[in-house]
Length: 192
Image (cartoon, rainbow, N blue to C red; front, top):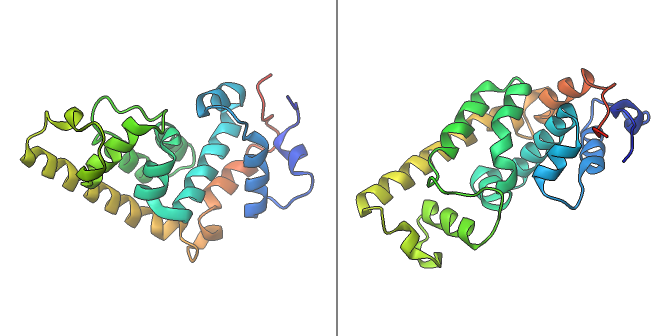
């Protein structure tokens, strides 16, 4: 693996741009699990990577569809990354949302079981393959769980829209990561 620092990888690209963030993120992305990426990168590089993935996914489709729906493997890492980026409220809201998922939810696999959980939370019972998994909930409990989930997603959307939206100040939402990047330019991306 490349032993270059973040500054060396950027090679003159302005750190004040999305381009710099995407360059670092692309350099980190490997065809392995998020856990493997975490194990191979420095904490700072991993923070940048998850931050870029989170904000980029949110800009593409929001919390429910894009992040929780299509990229669950980044979800467990979002709270600590948001704290590192000085986005405490976002971290707390994500933690609260994670706790609304059924206890045995495995965010590491975007498979049929996970799709069933999302369909359950969204109230799309007709798409759930393993309905028995959710029979332990009464209809009242299901309604409450789903309402809590919708409310949590709404709070997340409201919170980040003002800081990550394309018209948001602070470099259209990338400012917290850019600030973190500026403070970690001399850090290597890879541990080994």
